[in-house]
Image (cartoon, rainbow, N blue to C red; front, side, top):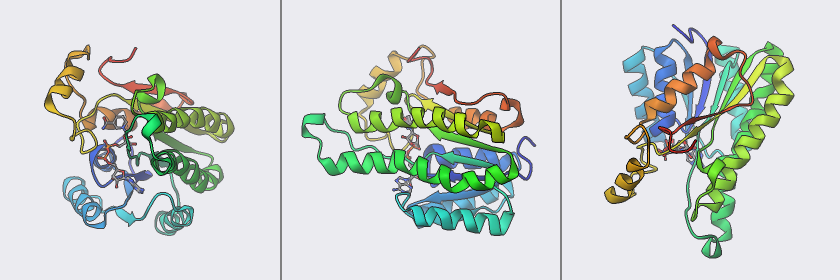
Length: 247
Ligand SMILES: NC(=O)c1ccc[n+]([C@@H]2O[C@H](COP(=O)([O-])OP(=O)(O)OC[C@H]3O[C@@H](n4cnc5c(N)ncnc54)[C@H](O)[C@@H]3O)[C@@H](O)[C@H]2O)c1
């Protein structure tokens, strides 16, 4: 098993990409710690992970904007498992609107959930990882953080910010044997992208060299690689998982 007995915290783990990453890690022997906002959905995800992997996850429901809650999660994880090997900062939201019409609170909400939480959670786990002299931090950005997108100025800024943060954290933490990398997914079929009309999805699909939309497992497999020993000489990188739509 690739992650046998490794302890992994995954945010946004109740559904979509985060749930798939948690399931993939658990099937590879990791002891997973799940975070999300919706208690019922998170508890169902934890049950599914236990059934399919035999690993009983710890799980915590809270708003990722709360720094105090994150410290609690870190403390409880250390109390139970004594170490934290992997952090996946995956939780994210969209509040799309043309920038001239974008309410300030939608800017703040997206920057806070998508970017500030990455800083806060990384800071919260870094001490434990520094003590251990090892760690893997994986931040879920987006191709939109590289290219920008009309109607997504807030989301693009948050995802571009994650990339800049990833490179800075990689430089600070590298000497402690902690790698920090980002994944930039393209169009992945989840609840986040479900509201898009079929015709719009088809238009996107036609632009993808690999000829299909992505699924959460496409991202989870790259997260598994970045969490594994196989990636031990890779840090500060952004890996695009987008079927080639953005080269
Ligand atoms: N789906 C895509 O096409 C796509 C593409 C590029 C990047 N991404 C990124 O991948 C990540 C996962 O996306 P997804 O498609 O699985 O989304 P999703 O909407 O299905 O899941 C989002 C998860 O984030 C959690 N979350 C949202 N707000 C939170 C908050 N305030 N506090 C705590 N948790 C919160 C939710 O509980 C949920 O578990 C996001 O960061 C997203 O921006 C997705």
